[in-house]
Length: 318
Image (cartoon, rainbow, N blue to C red):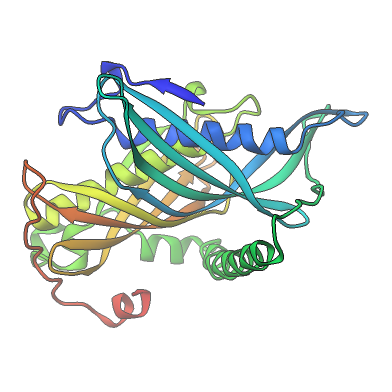
């Protein structure tokens, strides 16, 4: 896919918002999934699509700038029985010099699904992928097993959070900041809320991944900037796993916690929680790990204050 960066995609810093980049990446990923799984639609089915299950190593290498001509390349790297890995690379071209630069790269895992005419969704089997060599298949299988292990660990956390008390205890958004010391985990914790609207959803009435990740990213930047007392920017998203769909008209909350710091960067854990406002039921939607850089207005690294009062729970989470 190709895009021209218009001024409306740019924030006050003059760079394209991460949320816009995520929308483009999600779109080209879906195109790759559907093209791979092309063919006649089975009787009783309406459409085929990929359920985004997880993201590995989304690197924000360089900023996209106004009037960049963006090329998004997606390829299927590995296919298992029901899931597939799509590698997306984002290249930005300066139209005045015709120079290209690699701006972003990410590995995305999808689960193959089909929608029945009665709107039920079912997981389907994928056709095999033919690899250039056996080594490519072996490496892909290793990545697949690692992704399964990560998802298994996170899914156990999701099952634990089915008990509301545990969810409120770990991701409490009502903190008395006056009574907690500066630069501890609680003092830097931030949360943001937004209603899931029609523009955030697919035709099935569920939120797509990009508004969820965008809210998580914004919350992470706010938490890191509060801890450092200066601006921070996202270097990479180490991983995000999705556990539960988000329906339209839900209240989506992202909560960010700093898990560790180094000389110039911070690692944060972010959780996304959805609340059904008609019943009050809350669901643990997704969790992710982000790395951010503390920097001045010119992009030069700034020192990061170390975390203090790191308790037993924080050590365990780290």
